[in-house]
Image (cartoon, rainbow, N blue to C red; front, top):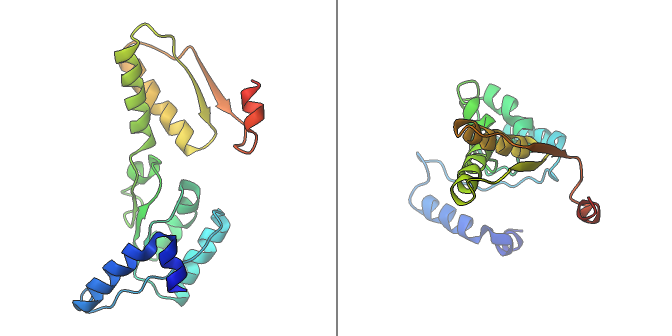
Length: 178
């Protein structure tokens, strides 16, 4: 199985693990990479997280992918005092709720920061532009919108329109016809 996993981009992870283990591990403990597939389904994420903690007795979880999946196991992991590190999500909740969930840490730049950068760029390059926003119906879209609105408000401007996208990515032709 390790050869198949290395071919999927985990080769460097295994090399680093082997290097750390050859030098005595971490506080005398050998590292062992344990993978779990949640199918990007929040209920499955919680199930797999419980298995990793309770059966496999992992020291921490790292590099979970996605906001909804990371959030599905956040309370459980924090109650169990198991670190949840480098969640691949830019949701503001990883920063906003850090005091409530000290065992969890996001990894990507915040979506609100992306919105702020986008709005500053528009204001600098097109200061007289009328700005509308079409955003996706999840924490990423709502956080980007929040960042855009913050910068626009500070500049005394508003969006002329905002539209919540209810279109699923599997429907690209519908998007083109709007």
